[in-house]
Image (cartoon, rainbow, N blue to C red; front, side, top):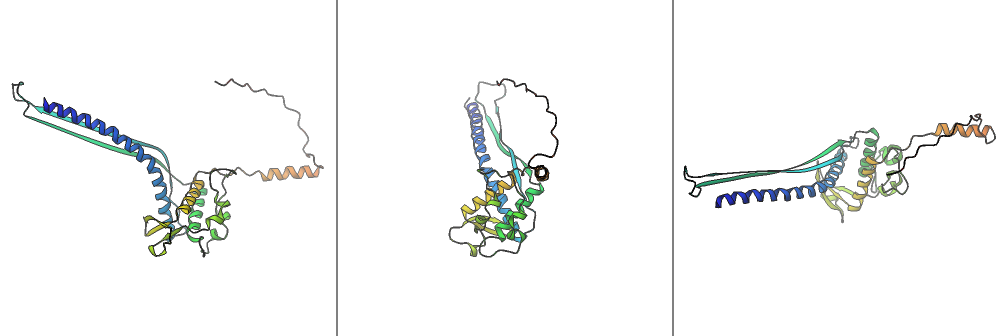
Length: 256
C-alpha cells in the first residue's frame, strides 16, 4: 500500500511540474521575440562589416506556441497467489517534455530588402567623423525607398532623421570600445559594442523598414492634366459636364 501511495504521489507531482513548466514556457515565449529581433540585427551588422553590398537576412515572427507533455507509468509486483502480503517490488517512471514553436516568414520584398540594406550600410559606413564613399552616405533618400509615413506616427522614418543617424553608436573590437558602450556579444567574426540609445533608435528604423506600408500610388499625371485643363479654360474644366447621375441611397443596416 505504501508503494502504491508513492506511485500516486509521483503522478501528481509530474502533473504539477507540467503546469509549472507550461507557465515558464509562455513567459519564455514573450522574451524570445526581443532576443530573435536583436540577434538578427546584430548578426546582419557583423556581416555588413565584411561585405557592404550583401543582402540582409531577416524574418518576421508570426504565431508562437508553447506546449508541454508528460507521461507517468508505474507497476507493482505481488507475491504469487497471496495478495495479503505486502508487495515485493514497485517501479515508477515518467517523462516531462516541452516545446516552443514560432511561425516565421522571410523578408523578401525588394523594397524592404533595399531599405534594410541602406540602413545597415549607413550604420557602419556613414556614421562618425569619416564615412565611406558609398552612395547611401551621399544621398540616403535616393537609396532608401519611401514609405507610407504618417506625421505623428510612432514609427521612426529614417528619411526624416538622417541627421540623427549620423551619430556613431556601433563599434567592433575591444580596442575601439568607447566609454558607455556595452557588449552586445560576438556575431560572425566580430565582437560588437553598442551605445544603448543608438541601438534602440536603429532597431526602430529596422521595424519601420519592414512593417511600414508603402506610399500611396502617385496620381501626378492625372492631377497635372486637370490643372492644365483648368488653366486653359480660365479656371474651369475644359471637359464638358456630364449629365447628373441618379442619386443612390445606401441601405444602412442598424448596428448590433
